[in-house]
Length: 495
Image (cartoon, rainbow, N blue to C red):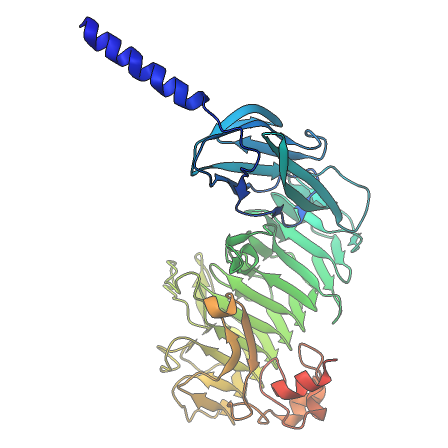
């Protein structure tokens, strides 16, 4: 027993001696996984996500870091965690030969009183054998208008684009009140935040300064490949309650939410929602659902949903020069369990349907002029499959000069329609090679729809979503939200 204890003591003393034997060779250096740890824009008063870098000892002997510290202490707003310990300074930190450790960093930016982002910098300093090395930390701090705790706007309100708006919880527009979003306004919506409108919403963007509603995550899920801003389900959605009318989304982008836009059961005798040169895209569930409403959309893209792109139940609808496409790949195109048992077809037109036990709601009118309706599903019968499903019955609907992913029909309500079984070639349809970006402009002059739009309709809506004049196009006018422009013509215009 005594011999055993002596043996253990010798082993412990030997290990202790190894731990304390740090090299004093001034030629030895640490190495790092990066020389600059850069954060995406950080909203003032709101902490960042955690980022990290690695510290390596590539040498054949252990080293002691006499100090590891933030150059400015914590005055800059950066915070550090070294190998599981929090603080702004650590003394006598050992690192074994050919070993490594993590340094985790967060930052909270104080309000700076400016509308434009302000660069904030600090450094993590490492002192080893009298030699100082460093890793630069930098972030852009952005002051925001913070709406937190559930804000209700009870009177007419104008939001201007002096700085972004960060929305936590829900922002509610009360009945009788109008919220106007000026050109260039950006809403950063926090996880599960919703915009709920009992009154009226008027988003008045311009071609060069659109209004944008998006999630508040500015970093990446997959480094340099998949940003949160291209990932569905980042926030809730927009809900226009039954009392809400005269809503406008002009030059407005709504993206990456969970439930997209919902128009609750209303009356089609009053305009519910108008979309002009807008984009609604990349929703985890349904993109646009309207029940017994009057909705009109022109020069607008509706794209990519885990549920349907557009479900129109009863009411009055008019779509002109719109692109409706579903190539969702970041979440499954799945069935949605409700009384109608709908799956994720691109377009549903439902006549005499009930919703939550209410109805049935008749479709009074549904017209589609110069629209492209497509998706990753195969072509199917218009009543049962493919990307389009229409209720059977004698009601007033029309597809005029459209491209439809469906089997042909000789119904007179389809006028000069191009029924396709294969999808047109677009500029980009997601995937890692495109960093999960989509561009639903047609990519070739031979694509169905190029030069095949109803000119009389195009004269009413001469500018496409990007402002290209359809009537002046050499190959136009083109069906859908985007006029065809050859890539070489675009490249020739670039300086």
